[in-house]
Image (cartoon, rainbow, N blue to C red; front, side):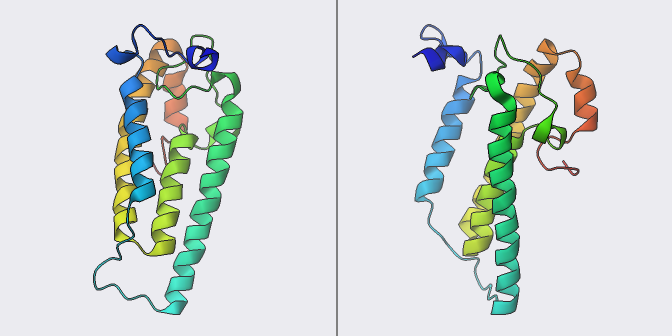
Length: 170
């Protein structure tokens, strides 16, 4: 139980969702749903081998980006890591490492991973799932950023320099 309390979970008020517990539950449901999501090709889309290989190369690039963002995001957060969107009481604002490229690299990593699966499998359902994950993490990040701005006065300046989910774009 110690890691859960270190992350900000408490037995008394988790059900009230004051620290974003419902976001974590919904995220877990989405990730579990991804495991059972069937691969359904895009209707009437026939991609011949030269283009298919190009899509697989893009999928590999997305997968590599996902691995880097997830791995570096977790490492760079260090003691500030929490699954909750509410910042840890003893946390610090991290603006170094991968956080210089994107404000939410862990969320970005999941989005890029789902996109990699969609491109590799040429799956319309997984492409739709990537869109759902993007919408979900964008909303979760917005809530998280409101709390981060309350806790860290220099977060406003950080937001102007670094994009939220897609490096240099969004």
